Length: 389
Ligand SMILES: Cc1ncc(COP(=O)(O)O)c(C=O)c1O
Image (cartoon, rainbow, N blue to C red; front, top):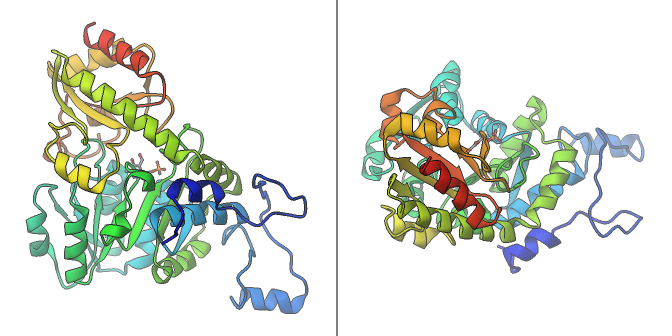
């Protein structure tokens, strides 16, 4: 683990300067690299040298981005992907064989569920699910072919919290890989490796970019596991582009200050919603009313940028609320400077059967707010007028 603070690592982790002695890392838009001579070329391809060969394998900008995430998460090595979903898919595809089995939290991102339910079964990889309040049931789900325990915390979109230490202990006891999607928390708020995670995955599209510009993903963990993911990915080709790597590495420089303000604003929004008569339920990890408030305080630095709430009057009231929003955005993304309001049951989680949606707290009236960096009074005023419309 680095001896420097996470804020410093996010800024001072930089690739070597070029002969121009630039202060800020330049963008290396090149698909390939040249060799000194035939022997240099042979040795490079034989993996006898650590150097850039081709940007599907590595690129100075993606190396800088990955190195920063490793330092922030306390990981040895990583690989950067074109999107969060390519990070999730490539991690599983690289590490699992046919007939393997995954144990996953039921409360995971919609596309990850679709991957587990509809795509991995093509290779006879099956998944069993546990509910977030039934960690005791996990051991009974373990089969001789189980390889992985997988979870997200806070969950998307219901912002429930899972006990990462308990999950890590179960995985260790049964010699299973423990993989966490840490996208909602970011390494600034929570470092799953400290709780026993073997691999940490991010959709960098969210708070890592933080300004709604580029897609990206990253997986970090032990050198041994990442080597397998790297060998799979350099052949199958999901690499992050140098341009997006450069954007994301620059964005990480401001991640801690941005996330501090996101969390500040989110707590203000959650407190406002909780006091409003047209709101039935508010979920925010650092509100005392959150069912896992104590756990959230233990494993997270702050409560995150996402607030979930249920409006009184169900689906129709939810529809009217969304139509009355003026300043905030109705959009599918999260972790942006712009506050985003979504209705998960009809959008991001629409492909999940209703019974399963309800099991994970995604009721018809649930609204998810990704609280942005506008002035909190302006965010609250827009929510207020839409609630009272
Ligand atoms: C928790 C979580 N994981 C993964 C993803 C997928 O990321 P991407 O959209 O970058 O592929 C998302 C996207 O919303 C997400 O919220």
